[in-house]
Structure formats: structure tokens, C-alpha cells
Image 1 (tube, rainbow, N blue to C red):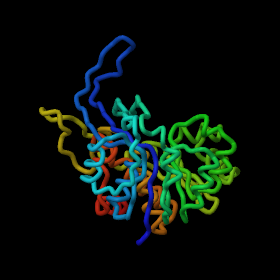
Image 2: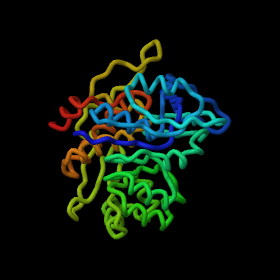
Image 3: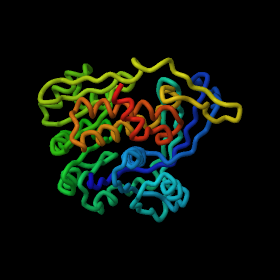
Length: 313
């Protein structure tokens, strides 16, 4: 396992507010029970997950003049190649997290320079792009690594660009969630989404949240359910000091920020090791679900031993 992985994309400082009793109506105010400050964005989440699973990973992305981000990445033992923007601050996201879903309010900041970062990437054995980039740049990036995956996030105009579809046919894996897959394919049924991707020549694995994930393997539809059907009832709460309660590996649902990015790490870890698509989906489901045990997109990510234990269940 001497592969080197480059994970490139936008970088944010996430302020995750959780523990709301209800979503406020316009003009109302709601108070969170907890606030977590963490490095965020799809690229740091996936890079951290793959690092935690034992891969040699380099995170590439733009930041402002921000020593805190560097210090936090050092603490997480994530190697990085960061481009510092001369005038913009590091991108910022305020994430409002409810048990069933989350909402983001973001300022891109230094991420406006992402294209420059992507054009300066070192060659890699595997490249994972955690952002939308134009079709010609994506095609060029496919020549910079032996295998390439992409999770562009919710970018409706990008998802509906036919030039992007052609470029996606050149990547090893496209990793959208259900809403993104529906936007691109025009289908609502997961199996019909997968068949449409196959018609376009796009190899995709679709994330369905708590319901699991789906893909095609040798032309056959593969659906792997999420952990909710096997896990005990959710236990989430806060101590008197505002910190999360101690909980076992089965305590899910505190914060879903970054769960899809953590799925990407688990899926790619298994696939790069030569495992089947079905087992890769299962590994992705496990990493995505267990990441929801803690606030922020990285703090709940499982160790390799813990993931292996879940895979054996």
C-alpha cells in the first residue's frame, strides 16, 4: 500500500451549531446547545479520513493567512500543500445541524483561487477532487493521476452541463449524493439513476444518507443499506459543560456535517485496496455513519480497527 493520494478542494473553517430544539421561523431566534469550531470542507474531511485509515495523503487547497488551520491540520496529522491567498480570508461556513439534516451558510473566501491550486497539483497515484471544476480542467486532471475520483457537491449548473458529463466519463468514480444524482440524471429512483449514469459512461456510487448507498458492479445493481437498521436507538445529548456525552460506537446522529465526505474516504480506502464495489459501499456507509457521532466532519471518523469490526458484523 505505497500509493500516494492527493485530495484537492475547498477548505473552510466550520462553525457547527447543534442541539436546537426546533428550526426557527423568519424573525425568530433559536439557541444552540453546542458550538464546534473545526476545519471543514469536503477535501479536509476526506483527506483526514484516508490519513486515519493509513494512507499517505496530501491535502491541497487555498486558505487565507490562517495559522489556526495549519495548526489544526498538524494536530490531525494531515499533510498539506496549501496556497495562501493574499487578500481573502479562509472560507467560512456556519453549519446549523439538526438530527435529521443540516443547513450551511458559507463564504468562499480564499476558495475563489481553487482553480489555480488544481492546476499546480503534484502528480499522484490517486487524485480525489472535492469540488466542481470546469470540464476542460477535469479532463486535464485525469491525466495527472492513475485513478481519479470526484465529489463536486451541490452545484446544479455544473451537474447539468453536458461538457461536464463527458469529462465525468473519464474519472474512476463520481460520488454524488441522491439529490445531486437526481439533478444530473433527471431520475428519482436510485436504480434508474444508476442506469442513466451507465448510459452516459459515468461510473458512479450514489450516497443515500441513512438509507445507505448504491452502485453498479459488472452491470448489476448493488444496494447496501445504512447502519441505522442494525444500530441500537440513537443516543445523543450534551453534558452540563456543553460537551458531547460519552457514547459508544453505536451512538449516531449528533451531527451529519461531512458525512458524505467521510463516506468517500471509506469507499475509496476499500476500492483502492482491491475490494469489491459492494464491500466498498459498505465501508463508505460505515465511515459516513460513524462520523455523525461527533460534531464537525472529522472528530467521529473511525479507526481502521473500528471500521473492520463493523465490516465483520
